Image (cartoon, helix red, strand yellow):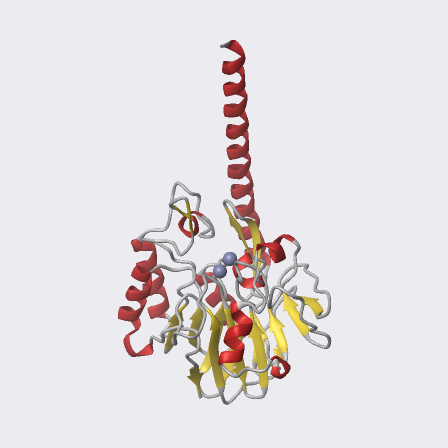
Length: 328
Ligand SMILES: [Zn+2]
Ligand SMILES: [Zn+2]
C-alpha cells in the first residue's frame, strides 16, 4: 500500500510540475510577445507598389465548393497578384498521402506547380506545413513524397529548411513581389503549442487598399491590422483567412476533447474563447470599414462563420476550396 501511495504521489507530483511548467512558459511567453510587439517599429513599405488584380483561390480549407475537391482542417491558398503567383501555406495532409489532397486539388483545378513564383509559409504548424512530421522536422512538404522545388524561394517566419527549395527566413516586414509584402513575423505564446511566429501577406490593390491573407491568425486580429496600418498609408480593404475563433465546436477533436478550442487561441485552457470574444472581433473589424472579409473554417466553428456572414453581409465571401475570391 505504501509503495502504491508513493507511486501515486510521484505521478501526481510529476503532473503538477508539468502543468506548472506549462503555466510558467505561457505567462513568460505572453510577456515576451507584448515586449517584442511594443519594440517592433517599422517604416512604411513605400516601394512595394500596387497590383491591378488579386485573386485568392483556396486550394485547401475545411469547406469545398465542389464534391471532387478535398477539404481538410488546414490551409493552402493560391494568391495571384497580377503576374505573381504565390502558394500561401501547403495544407495539412494528415495521412501523409501521395498525391496529397493539395496535389489532387491542384490538378482538379488545373493549377500547374510550374506556374508558382513563390511559397510563403504563415507559421510552423502542422495544418499549414503539410503534416505533423514536417512540423517536427521544421520543414514543409506539398505531398507525402518529396517534390523537386529547385529554383523556388520559400519565405518562412522562423528557421526552417527544405531539401530543394531556397528558404528565406523573414525577420521583418518586406516586399516579396510587386504589390505584395509580408507584414513580418509576430510572436504569440500558445498554452499547449508553445511559442509561434506567424506572418500574413499584405497585397496592395490599386484603388482599393490592402488585402490581408492570413493563415491561422495566432497573432491576434488587432496586431495583424495594426501592423498593416504601420506599414501602409493605403486603407485596409480586406481580410481573407483564419482567425482561430472556435467557440462552440472544434474541427479537430481527440477523444471528444475540442483541441482547437483549447490550443491555439492564445488563452489558457481554463479561459476558452467565448461568443462575446467573436462579437468583439466583429465590432473591431467593422470599425475598420473592411469591404471584403472571408473567414477560413479550418480554425473557426460554424457559429463564428455565421456571425461573420451576418455582420459583413455583402462584403462577406465564403472561403471554400475551388472558389476564387477576386479583387479588381
Ligand atoms: Zn496554427
Ligand atoms: Zn491553422
